[in-house]
Amino acid sequence: MAMWLAVFMLIGATLFLVVRLFSAHGAVGAEQIVIETLQSRIFWSAVAVGLLAQVIDGALGMAYGLTSTTFLLATGVSPGVASASVHIAEVFTTGVSGIAHVKLGNVNKSLFLRLLVPGITGAVLGAVLLSNIDGKVLKPYISVYLLLMGIYIISKVFRKLKAAKHAPRHVAKLALFGGFVDSVGGGGWGPVVTTTLVGSGHDPRATIGTVNFAEFFLTFASAIAFALLIGEGPWPIVAGLVLGGLFAAPFAAYLCKRLHARTLLILVGALISTVSVFNLVKSFSG
Image (cartoon, rainbow, N blue to C red):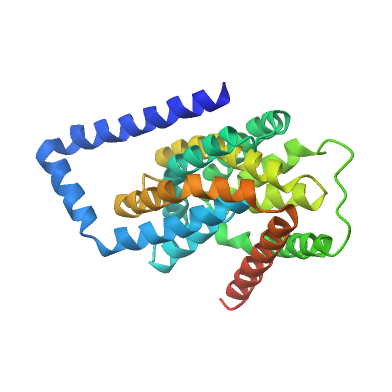
């Protein structure tokens, strides 16, 4: 049911954007915009970033937003517009990736339902806050938490892995915080939620697939909030992120299905630790 809802939402979002483009600029104007976009260097740079970011995100359950937002901020885009652009692009990339995870059996229905509403709530609240406060203020605190979790996950690789004997606890609070951080910082749903759940002993494959699928719905909600509060963002960048991400999404889900649990743990822990150290250094260096 949720998978088909995601399919219809993706189709609806695509039709809405196409109709809006033609109604605002006409057939000739829309064609000219497409041509200019395809000839834009920033578009193809965004395609490359979207491709890399989605391979990482789909396989590890995190870092699409972090990778893409870092690229956008480097081009001089404001944090608010960067987050808005990434979330609009993620509507399509997380949708395709999430559906692929469902088809490959990587999604836990119970965990998905527990993540959904709190995650959406946090994402919308984060979008509202970011429209008034610079999200970079919160980055150092989030980075410290993620660094500690990344180190903890890597340490589990060198011990005998034991599956959790209980259902994930405090999922609603975790999803609320993860959705909030994702909107404010331009990324963080995967690192916060996936890292915490995997770090507490839950199956990496099912956790990654479930968190990835839930991300589509909260991204859809936050994209709408950002469009209303900030604006749609630079379309050449959004289009490039979407195109690169769509090519990578099915492959990333397959990679998640095939990789061994210990390999996933090492990759997740190393990725989070590295990104967190980078963010901390960047924060304190001004």
